[in-house]
Structures are given as structure tokens and as C-alpha cells.
Length: 150
Figure 1 (cartoon, rainbow, N blue to C red):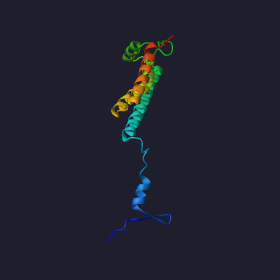
Figure 2: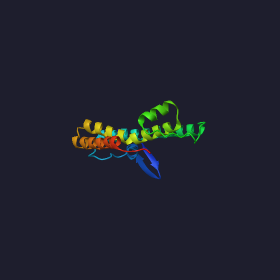
Figure 3: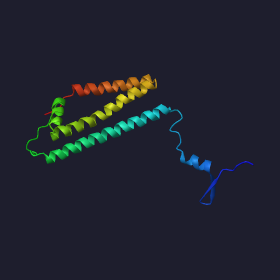
Figure 4: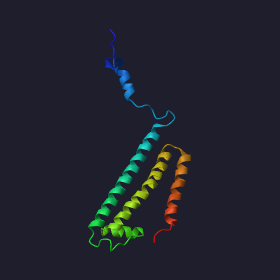
């Protein structure tokens, strides 16, 4: 006696449990795309989301401190170097905290490129690892050679 799969009646049509399960499971992203690529994309997505959220929280804290700061808008001292930013953060200066949030926001895609290098290297994809390394080097050189400030 063979066992028939249970049927689900929906809109006057019979659907077996197997067919219902197949309809729920998402199709593969691409047969040519390795599983590791999907994992790498998930990690990169989380890094970007967490970076943006952390920077937003830091900036909001800085803005909140700015409005609560007794000196108000009269004593604005915007930090221009990393040392000034970190000294200002330790002194709870609102402008420095906002600047730290902006640095975290700017650093987020740089971290994404660094993770891409690691992911491509683990997949033994030398071409994309080298391209990502070149992009990272260009980003870092532009940060260190860039002129800014007032």
C-alpha cells in the first residue's frame, strides 16, 4: 500500500505538500555563483548596515550633546585632525563626536573593500583579489594625500 502525500486544497485545486514546499523555497541565485559568494555578500551587507547604523548613532549623540552643551553655538571648535577628534571625543566635545561619526561613515566602504579582498583570496580568485587590493590602496592613498580643512 503506497502512501499518498497529503493534499492541500487551495482555490479548489489540489496541491501536494511537496509542491507547496517547492513553492516556498527560493530558487538558487545563479548556478554559476558559488555558495561562498552568497556568504560573502551577506557579510558585506552586514558590514555596510552596521557601519551606517553605528555612524548614525554616533552623529545623533553628537548632535544631542551639541544642543545640550552650555557653550552653545558660540564656542564651536571643529576638529581637523584625527588627534583633535579623539581628544575631543574624550572631552565629550559635540563637534568631535559628530566628526567621529562621519569618519566611521567614510570608513565603512573601505572596510567593505578590505573584506572583499579577504573573501576573494579565500575563494582563490586572484584577479578580483588584486583588483580589490588596488582599489583599497587607491582609497588609502587618497585619504593620506588629500587636503582638507579650513
